[in-house]
Length: 503
Image (cartoon, rainbow, N blue to C red; front, side):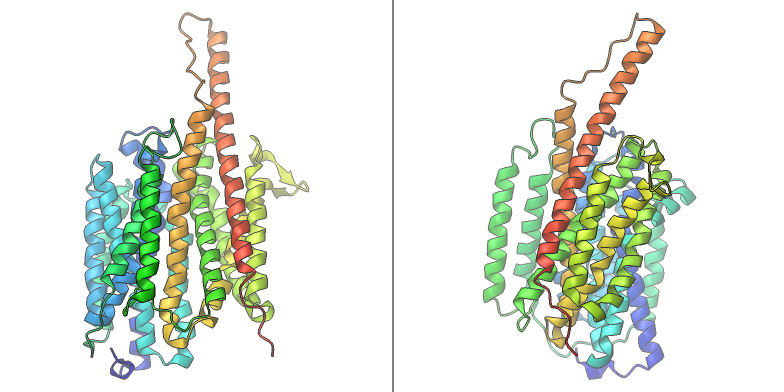
């Protein structure tokens, strides 16, 4: 699809087109995070005990898997069939997945299937919109437009949990979140039809179907390996090592195919390898930390702090508000300090925040720093601010390390890396954390209180409850220490990013 063919629309029409594309990106990004605030509601609806979180993990990982698999492959299809056609069909698929999710009844597998279809369709919206920006804007004015589209993607992580809880409360059920997607998708389809230029591609661009299937298969095998329906026995299920071996083989085959294939899923020839892959590695680590925080802080609030679903999400807002503040400041600092300093600083600050969160005492709500700053609020703000700082430098480093013609693909690669971190990170740490919880409570039996005096009954039940709380605190402490280590690894990757541009 040639740029000149799409350059005819006026400035107002172009802004409308990219605004509509950005809105579809935001819609999909919101749905990547909406289940975070309503996980316990989903558990209740499916009659699953809170301590069997592993049973609902596929609902989270299914969406992320579909999102990652759909992003590069379906994005490439828009080069062949046109941006408008692919956006519309993806919105139709997103609506179909939403309907299946909402109507899944008591079936965890129908629910997971619906979320996977949602992710598969929603994953294409970002790269197609980035490509649309490349079609409509000249190279010298394109960076700002790409930044706006990227901001819509980032906004989803901030607003998603709040949006999910708010809609569920307003409509009376978590299923209402997904029923609401149907009219929203219909409006989006109408806007895409009206706003986007109708332009047929000038050449039949090949699509790397083999690369897309290898990537999806590799990630799928990794997720299957980390899904353990019985974490009491081991961290991995009986098939875990075989699935991990299959994922490793898939990764080797994917890398070999991408090196030799004429048409590549993500063609980055001409990119500077060291800063490019360093940015992807840091983005992977930041994504893992982000998703673990979204899931586990919510669970800490509900299991240890006694908060409801809505109240748990409000606890998470301390982190969510600090995230965009850090992102804005990080973007401003990049021009003055360079990508390396800002990214390393952000990930080190985030690691320090997770170490502080890991050390939360049982009475954290009453603890303060210097007698003024609430400990819980401060620790979450530190972690969120640190992760926010790295958004700008990682995007900037990717753009600096790739030719201008590949900026759209490179920008989506950062998101793919972060989503892969979210997918693998939450699956791995959840599997390990749940195993640790069952290990810590293996010898803890519910007390037999029948026939005992009321005071003795109360004492035994209180002791049992206190032991459960201690096991949960140990589980979450180890998870957040692991998250701090992941941030430290991301900081080491960031050392390889470009420094400040000399005037």
